[in-house]
Length: 492
Image (cartoon, rainbow, N blue to C red; front, side, top):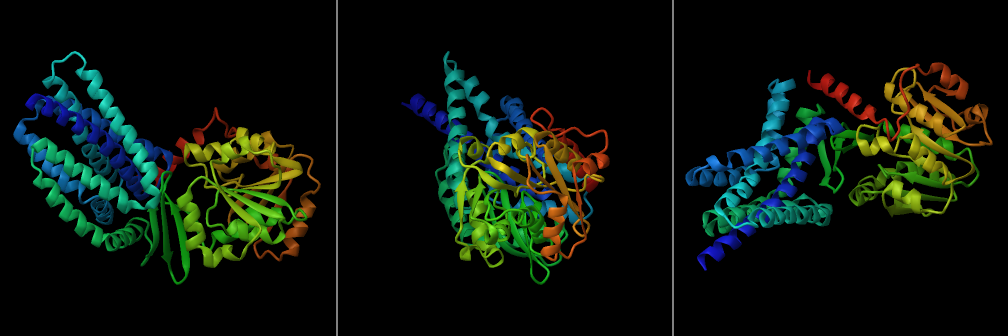
């Protein structure tokens, strides 16, 4: 009976370790990438730290005595009960004290490394204690099943906020430690701490978020508005100054009500006015300001957003700015943009790409030549796709690659350049019924205050440098190049 109980306990520990490792990796990737700014390269480095920690656990497993394992288990429980707040405060404190470059990155790498190491100790340890021929296969399968359950838990729970996910994580960790040490009282003590944390969760969330955006992002007196994990990203909405509201996705600014509202006019409002009652498709919800700019002149607006948490924040938090509750001719579809286009038969006069710059693989794919060609299949004859080029084609390598993707996907391409915003905006399609003069006329008619310039295809080609290939499925180097350049610029 004792041997059977011991075997069941081992299986339970491995299952819980698999669940916990998946959950804490999700949480810490969200936290650390938002602190370091969430380009793909940062996510790769943080993930590498976790897998390195996993390998460390395998290596030290046989060298840990019962006493040292007990100490490590208690230390892990205490430290993890401080997450994610301790990471936020410690990282920003290091940054505030002048920690830059390798000191800051190494600190976060070591933290990620140590967090995951604890969970990988037990598989090799239990296998070495069990001489049965199938022990490796059974135990590895149980650990993998735990990982699958952890991922499922993230997908089911994360949309309801960080608190439910963290409470479950804290509890499962306490059960893991209690099983290992045969100390049921650990669960009771941890339950009391979880209760206290839940009571002060809102205050901890608010103060730590404001601290990150003050010390790390360098905003004066930022005010917390909204923050949430989603299955896809960390979403933070912060108020700065008197009345400027900023939206951050994984630490990268996606919208601010003072300046980026004008960007939404050029990417959505201007091209919508090139048609009479167009059918409009908007890829990505952002602040939903693009709906406000297109709906007044559109027959109907469809918004496709993969992240339900982002859609909720857009409607609830930015409602006073996007006036979405007063707009009737629009609907929201929660779906992946690529999946939606491939499975939809409806065609549109205008497709607006309301998505972030190509700083991650998934975002870069949405700026690729192949995606633009696929979007072109969903356009009516003479319809256009409108894209924010993430800079100017005569100054930004990213803008060059996005522009080349448009030029290779469509016959007719125009660029609207806004000097006040230092941005270029692409308007592209096939067999367009308007030209550069028509675009200029719409700009004059709408009394756009910014100085603008409209370039046709030949003028665009004259300004493009010879180097810089189009973003494509086979060429996503812009993600790593841009991520590396931005990381070096920030930390070194």
